[in-house]
Length: 276
Image 1 (cartoon, rainbow, N blue to C red):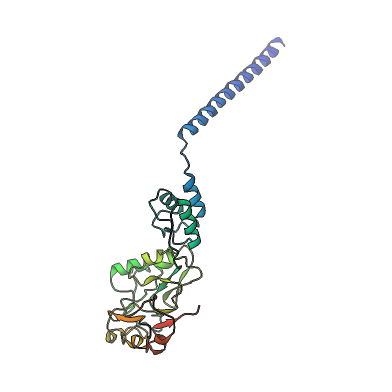
Image 2: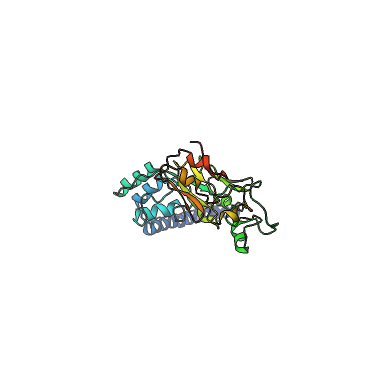
């Protein structure tokens, strides 16, 4: 009976001692971690944090940096301009500039445009393509997929895959941009291996839906809506806003009034006018 009580008393003392030891060790570890975190703490750049709050958080890479955190750091360190983010609005650019003690020119928002109207019923096929359904890979193989026009949209959707805003889709064999969703980040422009996507000001309503630099006699057999360089548009324009360069009509949007005269005279309807 005495031995049983003594053993029980010893177990309780051991348990209490073990608890105290563990508690002390835990307290010491906590103090050590607290001191270490203070010692190793990275100071927060308040300006960088404020810039990051203003950025849209798309992390699209359109600014040339690896996400919005890197972009904010670059702006705070004055390694990038206040308006480097293509997704942010002009108002946001102004706010960032004020924060950085600088200024920016307010510019009109831009939108991506695919310079091709060669849909399945208009663009001729010159072969059956069995390669990878990727524009860059197809361009590397040579040719332009199955299309006869070497300047036309392949329609494999590499631009669709890289768009973080669901703003571009393949419709009837060519890429089309949803202007309401497009943030002008420029990722699709960089992704296109044949450079048929460009950024245009949103005020641009009159558009040349072609990228071919071939002569008219070579365009007609491969696309019924390709620019043939006839120059009728140039003659019809009263504002000197459209000229044919390298067999392709090009519009100067600083002069274009969207009057539609060039649209009316275009024999292949490659010049299109979008609604507001």
